Length: 281
Image (cartoon, rainbow, N blue to C red; front, side, top):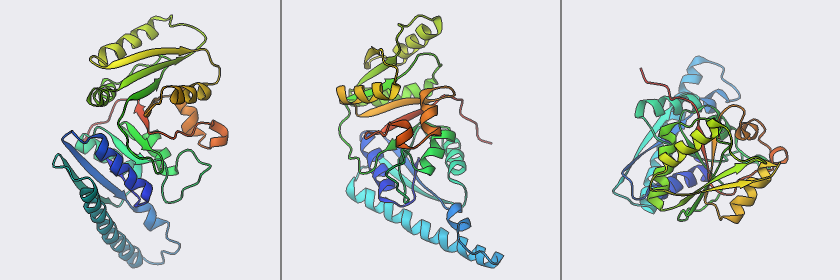
């Protein structure tokens, strides 16, 4: 699932997704949710005007989606890939979630910024909402980031929360397909001691069978500093974190300015969702 607002950053996310799954049979749903574009119009005097605006926005959306798909096929032709354009009069998060459930999508890929890029913001408002509420893993692609072969993935964890098997399977498959090393980073003054931590670590080992992975521990009070240190030290290609209550990621997505967080990933950022996916009707 690749939401788009037709910005360059959104198209870059389509490119990255196509390159990441170059050797996989993949179906890409390119989604444009345009309700906000209609309702944010300064003046909606009549129902007739609203209906006409919806029709014109839908027409424009379909034309732009067609251009995106033609462009990606020209740049990255791949017989293993198919692309389906979807124009939806709805709110982005709702439309993404509905399609994830309907199509049983494995992953949502999007740029960290959109048309209203602000250098002082870690995540654009749409990306932030998707990270918070969408029921699939979210892969966020930084502005202008160019795909390169994956070698190292960084997965900070305190081993305190259980993981969804489907989401771990996605990480394991990406790692095996690209022959990468998954680096598990435990940021704490204390070694693993609790039964819960040891059980969750064992689950990771079992899920990442036939996957190269290493365990690291660092005694550092500031988690941001530790993560950035390891991103640079290990030449990390994707940062992986889990969206769950009372985790470090929660602080990031609820306080999104760089000044408050100090973490502005210059590499792709994969967010795993720690809740059960809903079911379709």
